[in-house]
Image (cartoon, rainbow, N blue to C red; front, side, top):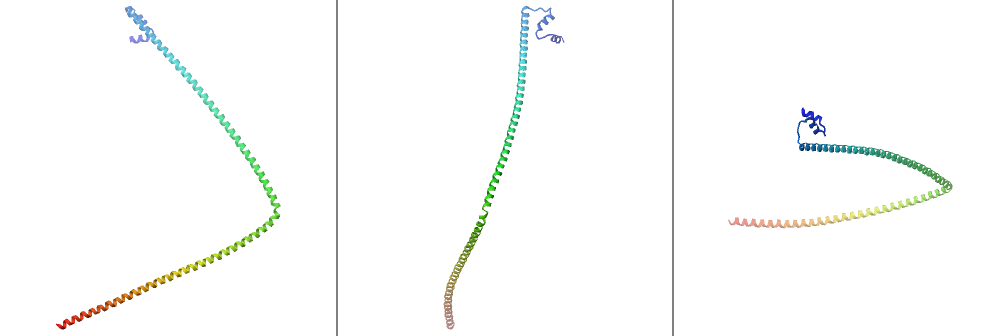
Length: 235
């Protein structure tokens, strides 16, 4: 409690004077008192230096904060100006685009009018030419009809000739196929006739061989039977 009271009264730079005032009966040597005053003064210097540094730091921070606020305000102004510039630029581009669109529409209308005038002029010239050529057109039509009839008749003749050629070719081809077919039939008949002749000759030889074998067998049986009869007679 005692120390708490003195700590409340003591400030940063009056610790030693208060202690000397509160304890006047304490006898201190000059050397000790001098050393204590030096320590007190050193403490005061350190505290003053710390306070000055704190004040400088606070001042520096405040200055940096003010500069940051200024930069922020400048940046906001720049952004606002940039937005305003972009808006004006966009409006300017839109006006230019609208002007170009209007010019294109006007140019298209002029071109349509020019095309209509040109078409009307060409149509008028063609109509006049048709009216002027109306008399000769009938003559040309008659000539064209006659020429068409001639071409049609020539085409019919060509078709008839082609049909005759095709009929003759078909007949000739049919005759050629018939001749080939007849030759093939005759060749097959000759082949089978030769085969039948060979077969008949083979059968005749076989029949002859069978007759010879049969006669030989009969002769052998006859001789064998005669020999057995002789043996029986001898017995």
